[in-house]
Length: 102
Image (cartoon, rainbow, N blue to C red; front, top):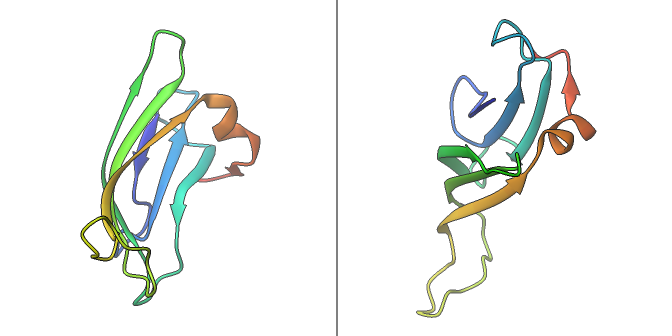
């Protein structure tokens, strides 16, 4: 399992990739975040992934949004930065994953 930004520049997309041959190939890829590059693209970084006893995967990562018209937080500031948690499994990665990724 590998999680990270699969772009050469920027952090506007965050992918989870799965290998079934000890990392020689990564045929399964699914995005947790995928923005188009540009001034309103988010920034997703510092991912962490652990597997629980029931074999499901817990992912956490920070995100910074640059979009206009964001909802406001309790202080009235744009809700643009936080940490996200995703609860996934291998079936989710394979369900609509893009095949043939390096």
